[in-house]
Amino acid sequence: MTTGKQRWKHLTRLCVLHRSMPKKFWHYRKDLEKKEYFYTCEQEPFKSFCDKELCLSTKYGVGDAGAESLEIGSLQIILSEPRLYFLTVAGKRIQLNTEQLQNQSLFQRACMEQEQLVPPTIRPAKWQQLLQKLYSEGVKSEVPEELTVFGEFKALLRQFCTSRIRALHPEEMLQGKPWTDNQGYTSFTIAGLMEFLFNRRFTAYTRAQVQEQLKRFNDNHECHGHKNINKEDGSRTTVRVWWVPSFENNEMDLPVQEIDNDIPF
Image 1 (cartoon, rainbow, N blue to C red):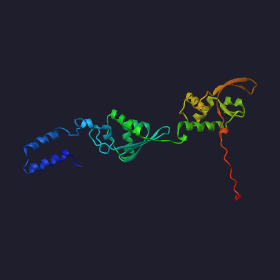
Image 2 (cartoon, helix red, strand yellow):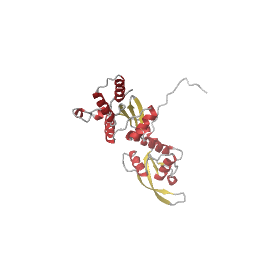
Image 3 (cartoon, rainbow, N blue to C red):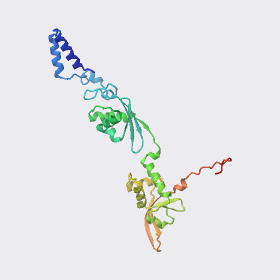
Image 4 (cartoon, rainbow, N blue to C red):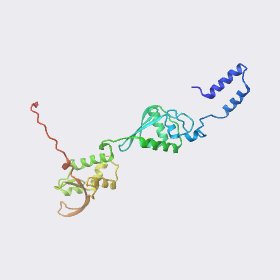
C-alpha cells in the first residue's frame, strides 16, 4: 500500500516530465519531506472530543507512534490459580498469563508466537488504563476447585490422611504419620504433613499458610495443641499436633443398584 508521501512524489515526477509543475507544488513537496503529517488529535476542536482509550481499542485506532493499532477486543478471565486469560486481538484469541498481560513486551511476544501479530508499543500509563478497562469489563469464568491451589492442597491432604501410611497407634505420629481417633478427627505433626507435600512437589504454601488452610477445615477455629503420647519404651512425651475432621466421615455412600441379569465370568 502506497503512502501519501509516496503518492505526492510520484505526482511531482509526472508533473516534471510534462513540464507543468506549478510553483506552489514545490512548496508542498518541501513541506512533505520535512515532517510527518498525522491526525490532529491533540488540537482543538478534536482534542475535547477525543477518547484515547476507546480509540486505541478499535480496529483503526491510533496509537502513540502514529501507527494503526490492532483491535483489542474482550478479555476472558479464567479464575484458576494461577490466573489464565484469553484476550481477543485483531479477531484472534491470545492465551496469556498474568505476567504477559501486565508486561507489554511479553504481551507482544505472545501475540507474535501464537498468531504472528505485532501490536505497537504504547506508553505505560495508557497501557495501564487499557488494562483497567479490560479488567473491569472482562468476563470472569469460574473453575472447579481442583484447578485452584487450595483444591490441590485439599486433594493432597486427603491423600495424606487416608493413604496406607496412616498410623495404627498415636505414638506413630512421631514418625510423621497421621492418626485418626475414635472421635472423627485425624491428627498429625506439621513436619510430617510438610514432608508429604514436599515429596509430591507441592510448594505453594509455607508452614504458616498451611496452618491457615487447616483452619478452613475446622470452621476457621484453631486446630493445634499438645498431645501426650506413650512411647514404645513405656515413657511419655508431649508433641504438638494439628488436626482436621476425618475425611472418612465425610465420604458419601452411594446406593448400589442391583442388576438381575448379571453376566457371570
